[in-house]
Image (cartoon, rainbow, N blue to C red; front, side, top):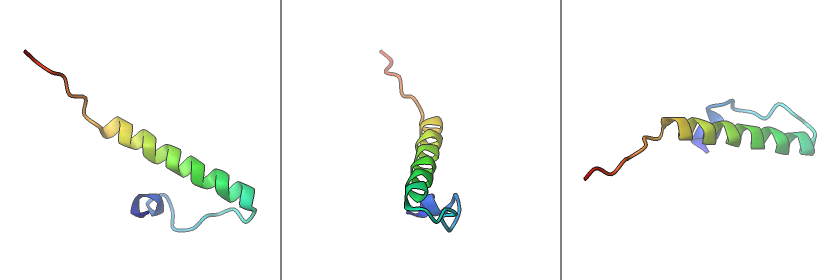
Length: 45
C-alpha cells in the first residue's frame, strides 16, 4: 500500500470504472519498476 501511495495519495477519478482503471495502471507501473530494478542472477560453474 505504501508503494501505491507513492504515485499519489488520492485517486483522481470519481467514476468507479475509471477508479478501477487508475488503480490497475498504478499497479502496472509498480510491477514494471520492480522488474527493472530486479537483478538477474546467473549460475556460474
